[in-house]
Image 1 (cartoon, protein in one colour):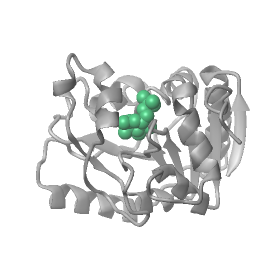
Image 2 (cartoon, helix red, strand yellow; image 1 turned 90 degrees about the vertical axis):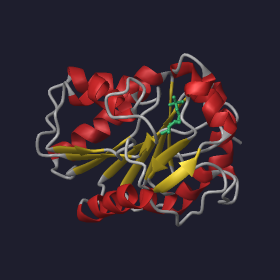
Image 3 (tube, rainbow, N blue to C red; image 1 turned 180 degrees about the horizontal axis):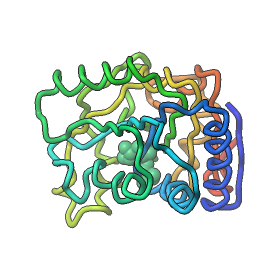
Image 4 (cartoon, helix red, strand yellow; image 1 turned 120 degrees about the vertical axis):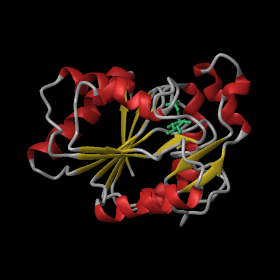
Length: 235
Ligand code: GLP
């Protein structure tokens, strides 16, 4: 895994932007795997302000809360429209349908979309417990898109976006770790001291399911862009 350590998230976004711009110029970005959370916000802002064009690119997001309709202000569908798609339309954009409680239907359809559109570049953040997408500790490294139960730590961390903790959905549809590892190229962004433990373990522990992001050690093309705080516990 390649490490890029930057001063702050603005510098991190610039590093990520350069990679994306380059892939687009070389026509090597036909399917773009996107993430939500606060981490990619500065990257999406740079993209919105740029002249990059995604009209020939398909986007596929990692995950969505179960039980939130696409127009709910905390749904990831809504987040993506607000932060990227309204300003930069893609040829097609896919996210799991959180308002459909038929797990098999949602997940089979998503896996089919992914089979037809293999991801060239996947953007990832990381949870404080080392989750990627919503693959919480214990997720199998060969897991596929499925309905997952959120860890207490994740519900706590994400409650900042909701009025009360009780409103945070308890489940999500998420690409599996196996699904994520099929992306040709991966960039993981991590900012802030809260991520420092997970980042150290991701690099230095033997790959193990207690730290989902450690599965990335098994991927041939991962770049980790992190600020000094997130890198502060790296051994
Ligand atoms: C969320 C998302 C992840 C994200 C992570 C970190 O729950 N499912 O895709 O990477 O948690 O979030 P943040 O970037 O806000 O720290």
